Every structure is written in structure tokens, then in C-alpha cells.
Image (cartoon, rainbow, N blue to C red; front, side, top):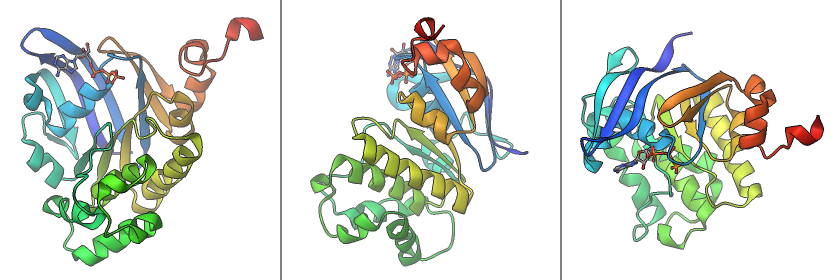
Length: 250
Ligand SMILES: Nc1ncnc2c1ncn2[C@@H]1O[C@H](COP(=O)(O)OP(=O)(O)OP(=O)(O)O)[C@@H](O)[C@H]1O
């Protein structure tokens, strides 16, 4: 299967000295959901920022390696060019414009729209996936619950009609039932719109459930990779990420 995203030997350095990624390689096949797991500071968010072109904003730099989207190396492109080519980064912490209404937040994403469809069509699609946003469309986004803000953050990505969405910790700080609802919709977007996803999650059990393949990062390197069904059976993953006491089971 063709790759929506292919990273080879990627190295990233912040402030000229802090090496955050020390040569990682990974692939997201077209139409798939791939999980990126790892402890705090392993380099997950840095990987997403390298793809979306955000590193220079934090004095970070790709020092070596390639990031290919649809075959083209985008490692040196500016963020607005990358998003217009179909890669949308839904950042950790539900970045929405809190003083703007739900619909104004969607309008703010139209600069990145790839398809010629009208705003109305794009917004109606968001409201079909997230009906609660339609009810709240004229309210300031700051009045939404955490779960609704996460839905809006994903809705803003949908407006752009991306080929691939980079999702950074969509479950963070949300109640388990809301997390399940949001992931069911993420899975529908992936299935129905064939949008590929690279998913960073601390919640390994949910990531392994919805992704088909996963990579585990450790201090800037890929320590382990495999299908999510294999990773779910791995002793280290069970101990470190799923809270299973494998010694006790044995
Ligand atoms: N803006 C920055 N300036 C300097 N160092 C940074 C910056 N952002 C991240 N780092 C460092 O790069 C490494 C990787 O950080 P990163 O945020 O990518 O990890 P992570 O796996 O996403 O962790 P978390 O789960 O805590 O978000 C860490 O050592 C971190 O301290």
C-alpha cells in the first residue's frame, strides 16, 4: 500500500544543542491510523511538529532525514504550505480560539481548504460528524466543554479536507465516555473520508484499539514497532503502558 507519510532517519535538534529525535523512521500507509506511543519526553510531539513545520517557531530544526507526504519531501517547507498540501496538525491541548464562536473557528480554517467545495458544505460535514457543534455554532468556543472543544479542534481539521491528520493526545483530560465518543468519530472520519491519521496518545489502550500499527519511541528513537494486536500482547507494553502486572499473571 502507498504511504501517506514516510519519515526516514529524522533527526531534530532544539536550540542548536538539544537532540530530541535521533534518527526515527516510520510510515503511515494511506487510509490507516498509526499510533505513536512513548513516555514523556520521548519525542512524540516533536515528530508531529517536524511534520507540520512548527519546529522553527520553537527554535527547533530538522538536522537530517526526510519527511515525505505523497512522495514529496516537505522537511523544509513552511507550515502554511504543508497544511495547504493536506497535512493538518490537531495540536495537544485543544487549540481553539476561545473568544470566537464555533462557526468563526471553522471559518478560520478555510484558508487551508484544499477542495473547491463551499464553506457551507465543509461546515455541514463537520456538523454531521459532530452534531453538538451545530447546536452550539453561535456560542464562543470558550464556553464549550473540554470534549466539545476537542471536537471543534478536529472539526477545524476537517474543514481543510486533509489527506492526513496528526492528532496529538486527543484524549488528554477527558472523561472515558467522551474519549470513546470522540474516538468512534475519529474512526468514522478515517473510514468514510479515507483520511490517514498519525495519533500520539498517552492512553495506550485506546490508541492500540483504534490504530492498526504502532511505534514506541524512547529518547528520540524507535524502540519497538508492530501491529497493534502484537504490541498489545508485548510484556513491556503491558507493564509500562497498559498497567498490567505481567509478573503477577505469570
Ligand atoms: N521547545 C523546546 N525546546 C527545547 N527542548 C524541547 C522543546 N520541546 C521539546 N523539547 C525536548 O525534546 C524532547 C522531546 O520532547 P517531546 O515534547 O517531543 O516529547 P513527547 O514524547 O511529546 O512528551 P510528552 O508526552 O511529555 O508530550 C524532550 O527532551 C523535551 O524536553
